[in-house]
Length: 77
Image (cartoon, rainbow, N blue to C red; front, side, top):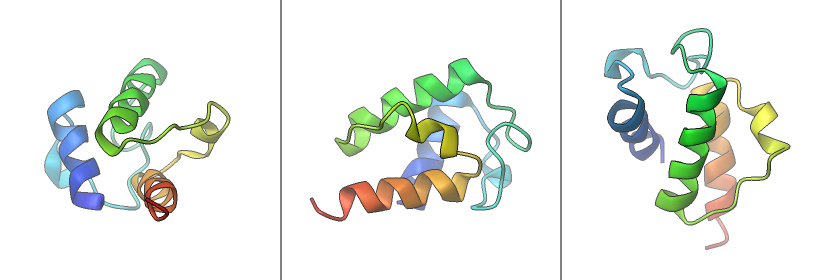
């Protein structure tokens, strides 16, 4: 899941690959703004076939937060 999410960050938002680690903060370390985060959420929904709740997005601080959330959502599939 981490590698697939990392690929999305590189391909969609042109984030430098070497900066993407589980502890990297989306805004602070990777420079992702709210508009880019919304775009990223949509791409995750398409790519992973999940629905991400609007309130859940507020919990996405680090790369690891998003990966864990996606893993939890897709575990039942």
